[in-house]
Image 1 (cartoon, rainbow, N blue to C red):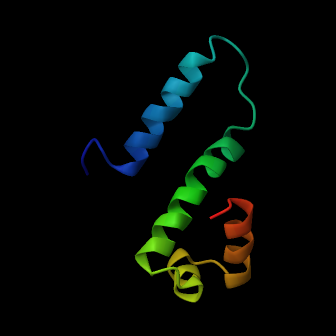
Image 2: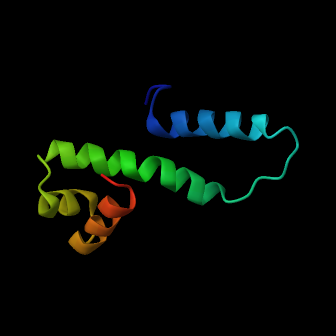
Image 3: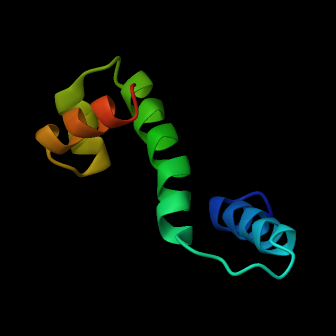
Length: 76
C-alpha cells in the first residue's frame, strides 16, 4: 500500500488534531471522526450507484432504513 492509503491519511489527520490540542484533553474523537467520514462515504456511494438507495445500502452493508436516516441526518 502507498503512503496515501486511507489508514495513513486518517492517522496523519489524527496526529495533527492531537498536536493542535496543545495539551488540552481530547474528547469524543470517535464521534468526531465518524461524523466527518460517514457522510463522505455515503455520498460517494450514492453517486456511484446513481442515487439508488437499495443498491447503495447493499454496497455500504447497511439496512435501507438506516441509510435513509443517515441521508436525512447529513442532509444528503
